[in-house]
Amino acid sequence: MFQITSERIDACALAQALQLPAAGACVSFDGRVRDHHQGRVVLRLEYEAYRPMAEAEGGRILAEARERFPILDACCRHRVGLLEIGECAVWIGVLAAHRQAAFQACEYIIDQVKARVPIWKKEFYADAPPEWVFATRPQAADPGREVEVIS
Amino acid sequence: MDAFKTIKIFYFASLRERCGRSEELRGTAAGTPAQLYDELRREYGFDLQQAHLRVAVNEVFAAWDRPLADGETVVFIPPVAGG
View (cartoon, rainbow over the protein chains, first blue to last red):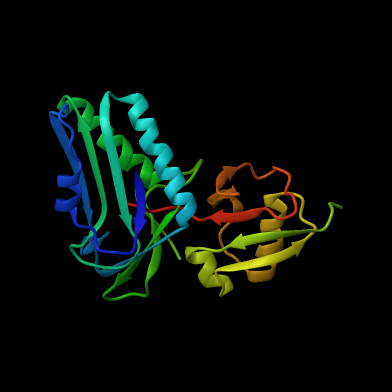
């Protein structure tokens, strides 16, 4: 299940809830708010989502992961609203019989979430006005820089 | 000219901040999302070009030249940054 939430994400509780007797591996990813970006001091972040579409698109990504990799279950929760440094912004958990599929599916899910799910991030800086940033350049564009900033 | 229709539009992130609203019910003769975005760009002065956006119609990514029908929901999607 893919969920957008404005509540604090409890990674430990989510991991404990993800249990299956056939699962020999649980791989999780805990994406946290970082205090810097391209040399700037980041004070906090704000995430915004087009919620119904984000949850639908996220659900499609989880379904794709189950088709591509021999996994047993996968879930993802993404936070919206104002987040402080160190807080969990996104949590992904994958269960599989064996670890390789769980690692691969977890990476697939976070890569696709960053590329496709309608969620936006505003960074608040110590020494500059806040900006909406994006992780990868859209469509046909210069692949030279991984992170671009739009105002 | 395409028929007049009413389209629900939601705005997010930089587009929301630029136009100062998060949604509107808009009467328009725009026949496609591309024409609708041109119309909105002129009205609100959006600085993002169409090439930097994707568009969703009724909560699914759509083509810019897809015909728009009365009552549909359109969202212009600035570059995303989840995770």
